[in-house]
Image 1 (tube, rainbow, N blue to C red):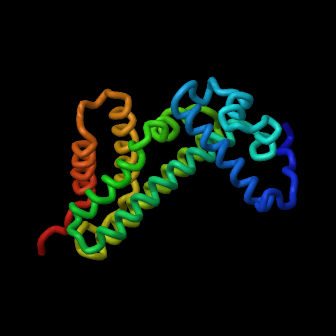
Image 2 (image 1 turned 90 degrees about the horizontal axis):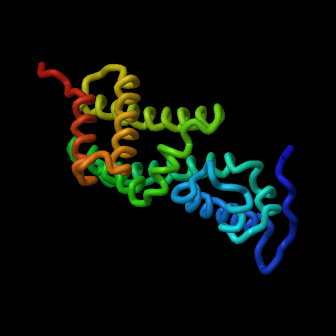
Length: 216
């Protein structure tokens, strides 16, 4: 398929073509979340099955997407956006708290958002792996964005005198890898712990990375 089919324009039922297109696209994404994130999974899903789950036609699918991989890519970004919004909201509410309390609030919000729906975990940490070079680039780019998030918070901690001034990029990359791996294993049932215990452990790791300034 060289490209997407063109959707019809004009108003219908009181809604613009853009509104109808956005609704159709979201229905495909919702269906993708169900099928990719649960059963049968991304690799066993067909365009016909996704369209049926969305209550739409395959022609309408190709008006919105070129391939199923495009749906998976959009879902991966959407799930990460939801988690980032939750983390940023928690960070804003935790302004002025001590470093440990602030880190706990942020990572509890992040973890609750990601693990609140097991399908999000599967899409973010399982289904996206090994799909294609393009998806791998997207996965690594989104992971780099989380590294930037940690580095930015580390820089602010340095400004407040809460952390030692140094390059935190390698430590942040290692921490994000630990977060991803631990949440994946916990969801798979390989880690016998509560979510609060996971968050507490991750916070301890983060605070260990953000070494406080040595006494004068």
